[in-house]
Length: 195
Image (cartoon, rainbow, N blue to C red; front, side, top):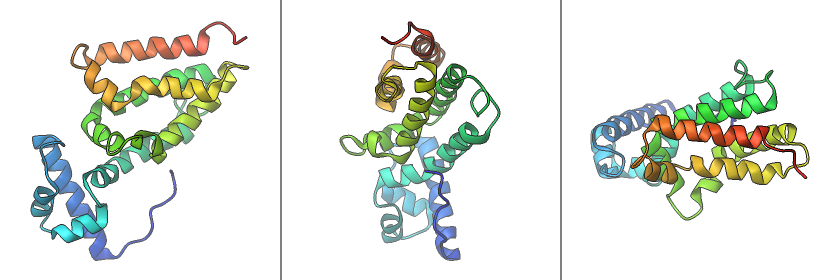
């Protein structure tokens, strides 16, 4: 989740960077769903075999594009300033996480949607999801002693699923989604004590 990626040959690193830049450009211009792996290979000037060996499929390419963004958010959670980073009360950190994750989700919604729906249950197998879940479970256990923090973390992450937010954004704008998620997080951390 925060481990450094394995070392790679210089030519492989150049190809990876070219592919990621090409994919990001094409996804921005045409949308993730409309871009084929063939188009990415052509834009990057690499063979399809290179692309498929490196990334496997479009969801693997999307995961690689999201990796740096996920690492950035994880770093801010682990060592950034409070309230997202350490040093703030658990409830404030939960609220800050929901706000930061909502911003991240809205900005990279198409990429996250592909990543989370590549196969049934893909969202729950992604390393980043396990990181978000563990982070929230720890904070919720502190904020709500006696509550089932493990389940509550899953429950709080559920409306942050890219597929769900994609559907909701057809009826609500991003600000309304963010406001609703803030209310939900606040209810979880400041509701009645668990019994």
